[in-house]
Length: 601
Image (cartoon, rainbow, N blue to C red; front, side, top):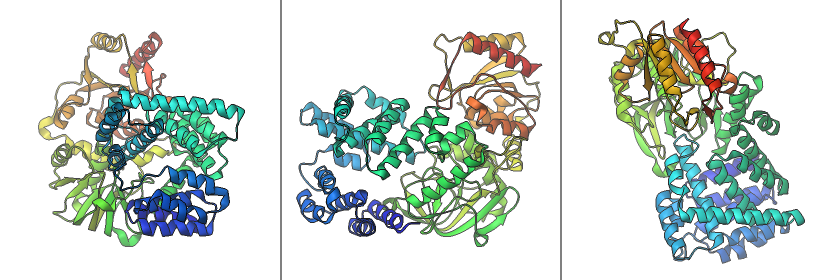
C-alpha cells in the first residue's frame, strides 16, 4: 500500500475517533509526500475547526503553508467551515452530526419559517441531511430508509432546499456553456448535492447526469476517478450494466446482475474486499489461519479470535490488523465506532448477510449455527444485529439449540476477549450450472437439509395431499408487480380452481410454525424472485416452484435450493429488473399461465 494511503487511512480513523490533533498530523504527513494533495489540506482544516480553531485562525495559519496552486480553492473551502463551538451555529447542524435526522429536519423547518435560512445554508443542509441518511442506511444494510425519505419528500422546507439546489444547477449549466472553465468549489458541492439526492431517491438517470457533468468539468484527476466510479454505480443501479462495466470493470454490482459467472466478476469481488478493508486501514483476510480454527468439517469452520471486534449489519469481524472475510468470499464494510464500544468476555457470531431477511436468517444464520452447535463451548450466547431478537430466539429454540440470543445495534462496536466465528467451509453450490458470485450466500447442502428436517417436528406432519397454489407476494419497491387493475390475483384464483387447487396469497406474516404448516401443503409455489421462496425448504417432494426471475436470470439462488431439495423448478420467460417492477399485461398473464400449466403437467 502506498504510504499516502496508509497515512490518509490513519487520519480518517483517528478523526472518526475524535482524535483531531493526531488526525491532523497524519494528514500533514500526506502533504509532505504529495504537497498538492488538496484533500489532505482540506482535512487538516476540518481537524483544526473540530479542535476549536476559528476559521480566521485556519486561514492565517494553514492556507499560507499550502502550495500556491491550491491556496485559492483551500481558502474557499475553509470559508465554508463552521466552528464546532459557536452560538451562531444553527441548531440543526449539531443534530445532523449526531444523526438525529428527524429532529434536524424539524429544527431546520423552524429556521426556514423564520426566514433565517439563506440559499447557501439550504443547499448545505440538504447535502448534510442526505450524507447522514446514507450513513445511517449503510449501517442498517440498506440503500435507503423509506420511512424517512417519504416523510421528507412533501415537506415545504425540504422542497425549498431541492428547488434552490435545482435552480442553482440550471444557472450553473447555462453559465458553463459560455464559460466552461469557470467551475468553482461551491459549484462542485452543488452538483454533488443534487447527485446525492437523486441517487438516494433512486433517480439514477438524473444522478448519472450530475456525475457526468462533474467528470467533464473537473480538472482534479482524483476527483475525476471518484466521479467516474459514482457514474458507474448509477448505471449499474439503472440496469445499464454494459455501460457501467465500460466505465469501471471492477463494478461488483454490475457483475452480480449482468454476468455473475465471469472470471472478471470474481476478480472484482476480490478487489472490493481488499479496497474496503484499506478504507479503514486494515488488510482483508479471505481465509482462516490454521491457528485460529478450532473446528472444521465439510460444512462449517469455527474460528476463535482473541480481542476481536464485531460491528455492522453483516456483522463485520475485525481487529487492529485484519478484517476477516473468511471462506465465503465476501463481507459488508462497516465503519468501526469506538465511541460506542463495549467489552464482552465471550461470544459467538455467525457470518450471515442480512439477519432481518427471512432468506439469510434461515439459509445462512440458522443453517450454520445448527451445523456448528455440537462443536461449540456450552453456555456462550450468540450475538446478532437483528431488529427482532424474539423471532431469532424462536427459530433457534425450534431447532433445539439452547443458547441465549443477544441482539446489538448496528451503531456500536462489541469487543470480545474470546470470539467464536461460525463460517462455511466453502460457498455452497448444488446445481450443474457454473459457480457464480451469489454462491457466497449459500450454506452447504447438508446444513440446509438439516435445518429443513429439524424445523419440521413430528406433530407437524400433514397427511393430506398438497393442494395449495401459494403466491409469494411482494409489496411495492424492488421486484414487485405493477397491477393497477388488480387482475393477477383473480387470474391465479381462477386457474387454481380449474386445477383443483386452492390459492393462498402469502404475505410473509404469521409465526414460523404457521409458515411451516402452510408450505407443507404447497403444490405450486409462484412469484417474483424474493425471500418468501426460502420456505421451499418446508415443501413436500411433489412441490414445483414457478419463479419469475431477475433479468438475465442472474441470481440462481432458489434454483440452487431446488436442485438441492430435488424440487422441480420452472424459470419463467418473463423477468423483472433487480430494482424494478413488472407490469401485469395480457402477454405476461399468458406466459404465467403457460408456465403454471407446465408445472402441473
